[in-house]
Length: 555
Image (cartoon, rainbow, N blue to C red; front, side, top):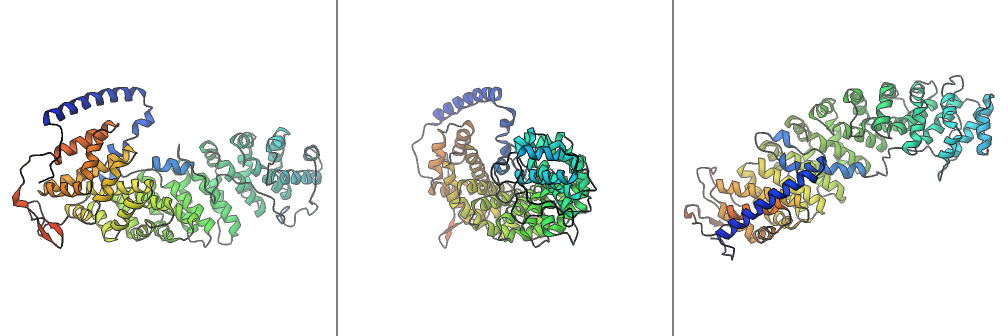
C-alpha cells in the first residue's frame, strides 16, 4: 500500500477540479484572443506527440531549437566577409598591368581617377578605392557609396579586355556588399549580380574568385538577395568551378558561397534551384580541409531542414556515410554542422532515420552525449529524441548502442537545455517503446532525474515529463503493476512534486498533475495480491500476467 497522506476529501478535490476547469475555459478564451498566431504553436510539440500509428508525423522539426541557432553568430562561418588587405595580397591578376602599385590617394583623387577616360588611371584609382574599403577598421563604405563608386565599379566589371580593372572593381564591390543590407542593396540595384555572374566564366581565375566572393556576400544578405543570385543562374557556373585542380583557397570561397545560397529558412530557397549542388557537396565532404568540410556540412544542414522530400534527395545523394563519419571530427567547426545535418535527417521518415542508424550514427551520438561542449551535448540529445520518436525497432537500436546510460546522465547532470532535450528523448521512448523497453528504462534509474525535472521553471518541460510519467504508469497499469511503479515514483520524491504542481500557475500543468494523482495515487484502493512482487538481488520482480511476456519484468 502507498504511504497514507493527508489530502482533501474526494468531494473537495472534485470542487477544486471544477473550479480549475472553469478557470481554464476563461484562460483559453482570453489566450485565443490575445496570443499571436505564431505563439499559439508553443505547445505544438505536445499536440504532435507521437503515437504508435503515426510516429513518422510527429518527429520534432527544428522550432525553438533552431531559433537560437539562427541567431547565433559563428566565429568560423560568417554570412558576409570582407576581403581585407594583408600585405602580400595580389595587386592584380598575374601578368596583367604591373603598373598598378601602392598608391596613397584621397577620396577626391580616387573619384576623379575612376571617372577618368584613361584606363591606367582608372586602374590606379580603383585599386586605391578597394584598398581604402579593405581597411581592417572603419572602412568608409557609406562615403564611397555617396561618391558614386558603385555604378562605376559595376561598369568596370564589363571590361573584359582589362582583367586587372575587373579584379579591383570586383574586390571593391565585395567589400561594399559585406556591409549592411542597405549597403548591399546599393550593389544589387545598380545591376551587379548579372555582371558578377558573367565573371564566373572569366579566363582569369583571380577575377572569377573575386566574383564568387562578391556573390557570396550578396547571397548572405537574406532570402531576397539569395533568390536574385539564384535567379541569375549563378549556381551552375559556381559548380563548374569545382574541379580536381582548383586551388583549395578558391574552393573554400566557392563552397562558402554555395552555403549562403542554401541558407535562410523563412522562406527557404526553391529546392529545385539548389539540389543540383548535391553531387558537388558529396565530393566536397572528402576534402582534407576543415573550412571546406564545415561549409559543405552547413549547406547540407540547411537543405535537410525541411520536408521529407528534401531530406530524401539529400539521402539519395550518398552523403549520409560521410556526414556520420564527420561526427567523429575533433574540429568543432566541422562537427557542429555535421551533427546539425544528421539531426535534421532523423526528423524524416523511418527509412531516412534508418539510413543514419545503418551508417553507425548511434555509436557517435553516444560519445557526443558526453562531449565537453554543452551545445554539442544538447544537439546530440535532440537528435536522439527524434530517433526514440520512431518505431520500437529504432528504439531498440538506441538501447543496443548503449545510449540510455549517457542519456540519463545528461538528464541528471547536463545543463538545462540539454536536460530538456533528454527529457523529450525519454518521453518519446515511453510513448512508442514496448513494455520491455520501458521496464529497462525504469531499471536504469530514469525516475530520479525525470521526477527532478518536475521542479523546472519551464512549464513546457514539466508537461513533457508529466506525459512521460503518464506513459510509464499506463504501461505499468497494463501489467497490473501500477502500485509498484507508483511506489518507486513516490520514493524518489515524485509524488511530493506532483502535489506541489497542483498549485502551478500554468493550467495545463496543474490539471495534468491532478489527473495523475487522482488516477494513479488515490487512496483506499484495494491491493491486488495476485501480483505481489518477489525480491531478487534487492529489486522488485513482478509476476507474469496475461499481458506480461513470459518471465516478467524488473523495475
